Image (cartoon, rainbow, N blue to C red; front, side, top):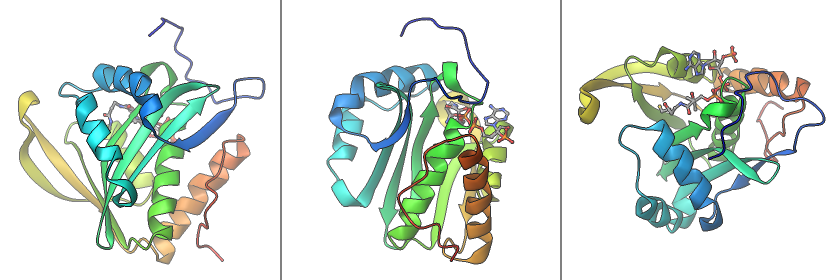
Length: 194
Ligand SMILES: CC(C)(COP(=O)(O)OP(=O)(O)OC[C@H]1O[C@@H](n2cnc3c(N)ncnc32)[C@H](O)[C@@H]1OP(=O)(O)O)[C@@H](O)C(=O)NCCC(=O)NCCS
């Protein structure tokens, strides 16, 4: 990837258009560059190809900044639950709300598809990501000892219960209002607030 100054400011008019799109194989070169730079034990390209082939039981969304992929999120739908399985933003674009935007979209789509609960694992030491998940309605539920074995680190399991209920709706509406105010694109799905 080209070196560029890190921009932690909010997105502003005049910057390339932001768009949340379904991930397809054409995004995989850029996705893999972010994946390799973001994780000590990255997923392989093959794994992403297999995941994309699962179709409706998966949600894979990418964030385009102009024509460039700057983040992605993946989720697996199992019966009436959704499991967030992968999530990263290009380090040059972190702390601009892009992660929050991707989470808002994936949670809204999962709710629209009937999910009633969401779960994920996060490194026990990663307070920043945990804070982000809490803002969207996740709460800590337990520890998986040595879940990140290569790094010798425990995983914190988090759940957002009652996805269709008022508490999660309030969280999503609050995040959406914040992002609408800075012109971020909203999901074409109901927030369930009416
Ligand atoms: C986790 C990640 C996707 C967040 O993306 P991001 O675009 O930087 O997140 P946002 O800018 O939307 O942050 C939203 C909130 O989370 C908090 N946050 C996110 N990452 C944080 C960090 N590393 N440290 C402190 N706070 C953080 C911010 O305080 C922000 O809160 P605010 O809205 O009140 O300002 C990104 O840090 C990343 O790619 N990390 C490496 C890969 C990874 O760890 N993925 C998650 C696996 S569980």
